[in-house]
Length: 215
Image (cartoon, rainbow, N blue to C red; front, side, top):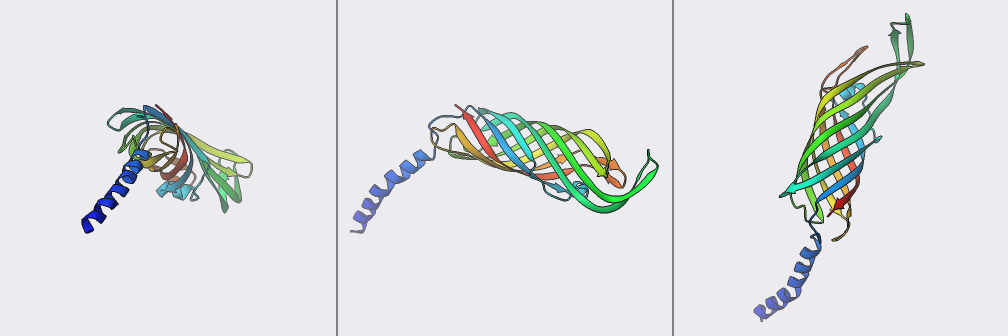
């Protein structure tokens, strides 16, 4: 009797398991995909000392091309801005020969360009986790605004961005999906004016967006 019950249970559940597995797989093999995401940056270390407030003011555009066995290569182009208003401090404006005590507004905006190498563990599934490494450079501008004075410097740098994330496709045959990723960014960028002397600016980034998959 027990054997019969086991056989019946297997006969009922096995088709459901197979059907679920089939639904968990795409109806095609991805060739490449493109992403658009909104970024929230969390400054770390010296960068946090400059601007201590996280910022959701950023976006990222990227593309990945599947080479073989889950290995991808592609690019990322981003724009990001972090900013904060600080309490009154006294600053000397050297070229004006004056000292001002006032609130100051600090912000940095950056444009990264990176080549990205990644690995998707199960690229043919509806949920495809991955790891990647971005290598490239950034253009950054650091601004200190005191009343009508805008004191700033701009720099190019070298940057590395390891990332973990996942693509979530909207259906077996759909070309659209969602992207969720988290990365750590290290740069050689610096801030060197007034009492700000920083190096190797770092941050964490949360990326949430959409992806278009090419068959």
